Each structure stands twice: as C-alpha cells, then as structure tokens.
Image (cartoon, rainbow, N blue to C red; front, side, top):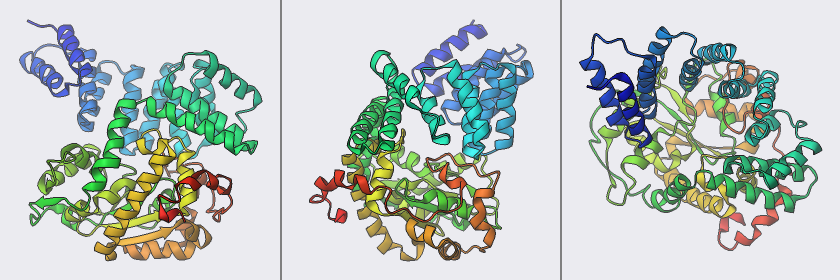
Length: 483
C-alpha cells in the first residue's frame, strides 16, 4: 500500500522521464482509491506539474487553487497561478497573484522577474526597471537580466558594467544562455561606437551560445524548418474535408511573414478598433499540431477532424474569448500552413507583413530570438527567407482574395491610408483611435518590438541598417532576391 509521499516520488520520477500520462494516471488512481483520505498540498502540486506539462491549463489552474485552499500563503503556488492567468491574457489576475507571491517572499527571484517582464510587456517601464534592478541585486551574475533591463533603459549599460560583463564571460563558468546575453550586450556596446565589424563578430558568438543553450531541440527544429516543411507545404492531402464544424463560420485574421517585419504594429492596429478582437499572439497552434502529428515523410495525409479537434481543445484549455468568431493569430510561420488553415477556417484572411529585405535580415540577426532556431546564423536566416519567398509566391497565386501584403515603410509613412486598407480587407470599421494604440494601458506586447510600439508610429528609417549590408554581399550570387 503506497502512501501519498511514495506516490508523489513515483510521479516525480515519471515527470523527470517525461512520462506525463503515466504520472497523471497513478496520481488520479490514488485519489480514486483513497476517497476518505485528506490529500496533501504537495500531492495537488504534483498534479499541477503534470497538467502543466500536458498543457491542460484548466486542470493546472484547478489543482493550484486546491493547493491555495490548503495553504493560501504559498508563494510558489501563487506565482504559478499568476503564470496561468498571464498565458490566458488575464493580466489583472496575473498581476494580483504575482504581487501576492512577492509580498509573501520579497527575495523570490522568479516572481520578481515575472513582475519585471509583465510590466515591461505592458509598457510600464519604470515599474519594470524597479524589479529588474532588484533581481540583479539578488542574482548579479545572471546576464539575461542585464539584457532585458538594457532594452528599456539604454543608458543602464555603461563602461563599468561592460567591464563587469567581460570579466564574467572571461572568468566565470556560466550557462550558455547567459553567455549569449553577455555577447549581445557587448555587441550593442560596439554598435554605439560604430565598430560594426566587431559588432558582427560578437553577434556571431552570441548566436552560437544561444543555439547551444538548447542544442538538441534547436537541431531538431532547424532540420524541420530547412528540410521538412519547405518540401511539404504544397503536397499535403486531406481527409474529412467536407465535414461541417463550427469553425467554418469563424473569420480569423492570420498575420504571417518574417520576424521584425512590422507584424506587431499590424496586430496592435487590428486589436485597437471599435470591435474588440482577441489576439492569440504568437500561439503557434498550427505549427505545434502539424509538426508533431504530420511532419514525418510518411504523413502527408492530414486528418482535418483531428486538426479541428485539437484546435478546439487548445482554444478551450487556454480559455480564449472567441464569442464574436473573429480573432488574430500572429504566428508568423503560418505561411507554411495556409492550405491547412483554409481547410479548417474557409473564411480566414492573411496579412503578409514585409519590409526592405536587407533591413529585415539584420533586424532578425541583431535580436535574441531564443526560441527560433533558424535565426542564429546569417546563412540559416537567408535560407529560411528564400523558402518564405517561394511559399508566399505559391499561396499568393492560389488564394489571392485571402491575401494582403503590407509594407512596413508604406505603413509608417502613411499610417492612416494603409490602416484603412487593412481594416477594409478584414471587413472591419476603421476609426481614428486605431492610430493611437500606443496610448492603451491594456496593450500587452511580448515580442521584441515591445519598446518601439509604445510610441507614435515613426517614419521608416532607411539608413538604420545600411552599415551592415556589405556583410551579406557574398550571398548575392546564391539568392537573386538580394539583388
């Protein structure tokens, strides 16, 4: 006969092995067979961990709430509950639980960083800075914190801090992820001195460490982006096409394209109109389903009912508000999945965000996009972009009525005209307040464009990336679009 501690240990071992279903089963079976037993907070917390790994958001929330009924002053539980509300987009509740956790334990680094990130993504930069500084005091060698703080306070990284960062990189044994942020900071320092050649060298080092920080996963996803999906996007076949579902009546707006191409501005414009449209952000729902279920060479046949069921399950789990049957999805990689999306959402619209391609290349390369494996070398960036052009050329011809291309330079130089074009394409009513999205207090932006988006739309700067263009001249023979 197992006691609660034995079951928790067994489940924890299974979680470590990523056998989440088995862990869930032994925990639930124990509760089922011991109905009169008082369940311990650690038991419910283990159930939360399993639910969280399985992305069962509502179950995860339920078990954390059970933990709080037993002990309402558990700072770890409060912080994790805040995380769930944050992922759901319920910022008011996320902030409430983060602050409760913080007030119980003011040296709890995880919640301090969560508050710093929350306020940064809301544009409350002074609040964010306060928590980042507190985090640095608690963990002075964690260079990722310096990097995040430097994005909201350009003056924070001075000569003394650069010397400190160099010393850590030279003498301390730190994680690859922290080393990458250190080199990004050194690169930015060289940029300010207009030492562009040295900046590029440091950026290469930063990306090497960033790639190696999750090397196994990055190698796997890089192979997918380079060798699998570029050969499949136009070859999928489908079953259960004619089945009618409630998704047929939805009118989603998919913003697609390359990172750093102006997609966040488009998202902010669309979510700031008279009709409140839920934005799912960079949900990567289609990528998650297709890459997991159908990416092998043997699986070109897609069961649309399976895709539909999984989409509905994810929407329900994440508690999205989709009552008006219109939402925004800014998963940029969805250009690979246009055929599949059109089968699931026949009324879908796609807005392809573009900018000067050389500028776009370096806007990507100069940014720490840690979760996107192909962004960590110029060679891979160029290969991905080459595939992007091929795919978009194909789908623009196949679905011309469902595609709108928006150029960032045109959008910033004539924001009223182009925003009206976007709204007309989406069948929405335009108003002047759309152009004042930067004044919104509830505008949550978690992408790299978070800082710029808080200001008035500025005219496109054609000179910003001019000093870097020579560094890709060697690729002009390989990619005609660079000419």
